[in-house]
Image (tube, rainbow, N blue to C red):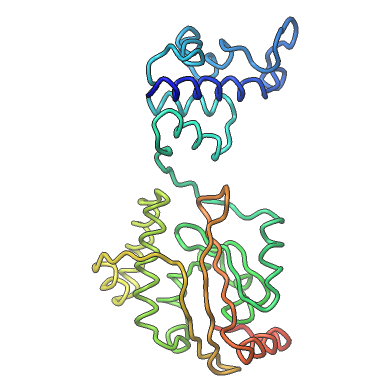
Length: 278
């Protein structure tokens, strides 16, 4: 660590410490000259030496290990962006990714999806489980609310869903791409064990998945075109774009815009009819 990085790290830790309420941790608020936790209280919560932590804040200590820095971040109740900033100051790179399966999305994020009135939009996890969707997605793709939670997975639907293969304009190319993009997303998120479990299951259920998985292809799910053969409205062409969800590295949003006004009209009709697609 450079001298400047050491000073910045110490100042950042001090600011984070000052924002915390001692009473919420069971510490007395009496006789405190400055707001927030005392240094020894942070050290106690992080199970480290109070002297060493003091030196760290003052820019006199040695570089902490990643394990110790994680304990300090937990003791200061840092959010994920704050913890990432802490590691950038200390090491010049973000912390090692540890995947945590998300439980859902916030109402605010759901409202973002709902603003895409006639553009199907979904929120997916790093292992491509669909967590949230809008009405257009339910009409054009499938009504995920009618599926068991375990089945709300894009790979399961692609390789094992009823009628999905027939409704893709070029199923093999799309399936290869999905496997390659899934591999990249999941490994980037640190979900190696979750990937192995799902891949082993799908290799048994689908020979095609097993063959694509052995290719070890990796791609980025950025932008592209998707064509669906909808049983009620015929071919629908969609342009999709993938977006990161700020503050939620475990989630990604995909928005599918109708390629033409004719495609938009087909989607509007499907939403009126309430006919779910593939």
